[in-house]
Amino acid sequence: MDGLAVVIALAILVVITLLKGVKTVPQGYKHIVQRLGKYHVTLNPGLNFIIPYIDSVAYKLTTKDIVLDIPSQEVITEDNAVIIANAVAYINIVAPEKAVYGVENYTFAIQNLVQTALRSIVGEMALDSALSSRDQIKAKLKAAISEDIADWGITLKTVEIQDINPSPTMQAAMEEQAAAERQRRAAVTKAEGEKQAAILEADGRLEASRRDAQAQVVLAKASGAAISLVSEAVGNEELPVLYLLGEKYTEALLRLASSNNAKTVVLPADLPQALRGILNKV
Image (tube, rainbow, N blue to C red):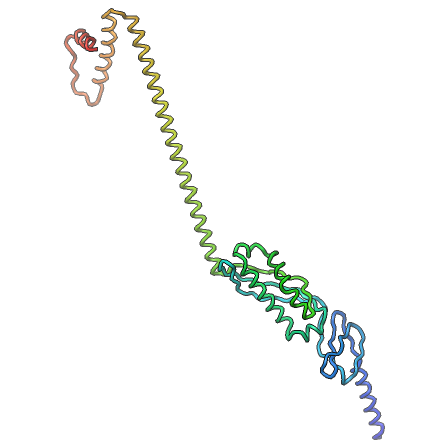
C-alpha cells in the first residue's frame, strides 16, 4: 500500500514537472525566460519547452503597438509665454529583453523623455509659431527620442501632439490684447473717416469759392460789356443816361424803403438835378 502511494506521488510529480516544462505563448506576446536568475532566452508565440525548476518565465511582454499617453505639462516659449501641451506616443517593442533589462520602467522612461524633449523644442519657438506648427513639433520630437529608445529595443512608430493651448492666464491676456487691438482699429478707422470727411468738405468749400470767383469775374465782364454798349449807344446824349441812372436810383430807394431797419426815406426835391450831380461826380 505504501509502495503504491509512493508510485502515485512520483507520477504526479512527473506530470507536474512535464507541465512546468511546456509553455504556450499567445500570439502578440513574447516571454522572457531566466535560467537561475539570468536571462536565457525569449520565447516566441506558440509551443515552447523549458527546463523545469531551472528556467522560469520572468516577464511577459506584448509585441503589439502600445499607446502611451503623455501627461499635460506647462511649457514656456521663447517669448516667455506659458502654454499647456500634451501628446500621445505609439511604440512597439522589437527586442523584449532590452526593454526589461535596459531600463527599469520603459513606459515611465519614455513619458519623461517625451516631456523633456517637448519642453526643449517649444522653448525654442515663439508663442504664435508653437501654436500653429504641430507638424514641425511632431517631426522634431520624433527625431529627438527615436534614437534614445532604440537602445531599449523599442521603436517609436509616431508621436502626436494632442493639445497645445495657452494657459488660462495667457489666454485671458491674449483676449484682452485682441480686444484692445479691435478698439484701436475702430479708432483708426473712425479717425480716417473723419479725416476724409474734413478733406472732402474743404475741397467742396474750395471748389465753391473758385466757382464764386469765376462767376464774379463773368459778371464783372458782363457788366463792363453792358456799360460799353450803353456808352456807345448813348454817346454824348444826357437824357438817356439820366433815365438809366434815375431807374437804378429809384430801385435802390425802393429796396431801402422795404428794409426792416428803414424808418424814414427822404426823396430829393429835384430828382433830375440830383442825378446830374451824381453824373458830374462820376
